[in-house]
Amino acid sequence: MIDVRRLQVLRAFAEHHTVAATAEALGVTPSAVSQQLAALAKETEVPLVERSNRRFVLTGAGRVLLERAQVIFAELERAQADLARYAEGSLGSVRVGAFATGISNLVAPAVARLRHTHPGWDFSVIQAEPEHSTELLCTGEIDIAVTMSSPHLPATGSPGFQFHPVMVEPLDVVLPYEHPLATKMELDLATDLNDADWIMSAPGTVWFDTVAAACHQAGFHPRSTHIVTDFSAAFALVAAGLGVSMVPRLAWHGMAIAHMVVRPVRNGPRRHVLAVTRSGANPEPLLTAMREAAHRITVPAGRFVLSA
Image (cartoon, rainbow, N blue to C red; front, side):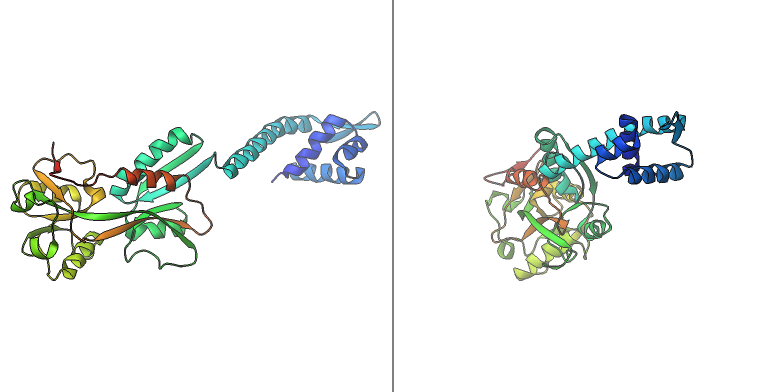
């Protein structure tokens, strides 16, 4: 491995022509210059200087190495400039892991905005569900985990992690358009939905656990008639009149599905969406951009209808 500092001595020698002048320019002794040039020749395994008419000059190999060294120095200068821009916040590279609806409604619009406001930043996005995102963060595969409050999160105050709130997300009920409860502007779990046919995910998933816990808090156990693994399947079953479902607001925001209405739940469940980073890491500017995207999430009001 060639020592870049010795390359700098070689460049100075080429500019000043003598060991003494090189030493003066670098603020070292002539002996130090000679030692550095000798060590560089040993590293490259070729002679780099030779005596000519009572003075030392670069060999052909020395000139070839110096030509390559100029490229190395230029790259080092660019690297230093990039690091300075990174330190001031105008340049960065971030790998983001997020759950599907978080990507759709928070990460994607945030990154799209940052492409214009922070053109020096590069973002790489991968889908990572809450049960996997912390592990990816620990292994360094991602820099920011956009996740939600769940048993999979490290405990608050865990060393090695920082937690940054993004939004508090309510869960809303989706009903068939012709459902008798569709005329109500707000629903109550205990009185309105305790005998409904529910469309849910499988037990053990974050979605199921959140809905089941809310129903238990309201005093009943939901009758899980249909089991699905994604929200689009739940919406299709609701639109077909086969039951009701309760989904996070990010799941239906921006959707266009006919024959359904969305209703908020009185004192209903909420989940916290978080950005998790390793300790010492800075989640900006993505965090602010995601919070701005969260403020634009639609709130169901009146006879809000999901329609094609």
